Amino acid sequence: MREETRRKEIIKLLSEVKEPISAKEIAQDLGLGAKEVKTIYNHLDHVAKSVRSNGKRLLMVPPRCKECGYVFNNMRRARQPHRCPKCKSERIEPPRFIIR
Image (cartoon, rainbow, N blue to C red; front, side, top):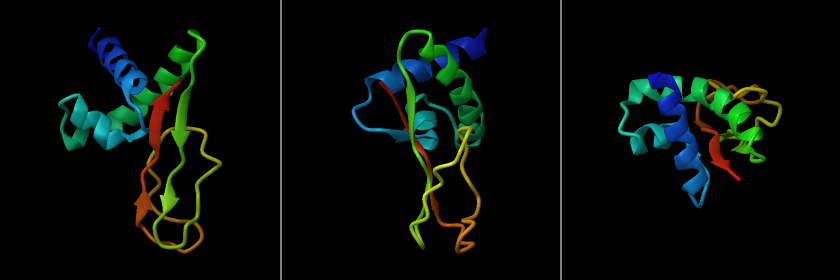
């Protein structure tokens, strides 16, 4: 039951923000610790399916490498990449999300 409530909180938050926000910012806004960020990504996959039935979409600004600028456009699931496939840097800007 708590899982549904958490997802509803995420949907409400992402529907109200003016600019896309990261999973870390979502966790902070919901009063969760840094360890909960991974579970936010799991919830976001379900949130995308839920909002689609209401005619809305979960939009993702893809992650980008801070070193070479590589953009991870081919992502199927919400997650934080660990390393750039182009330059191997681990300085990756996280994906950001919004519901419209």
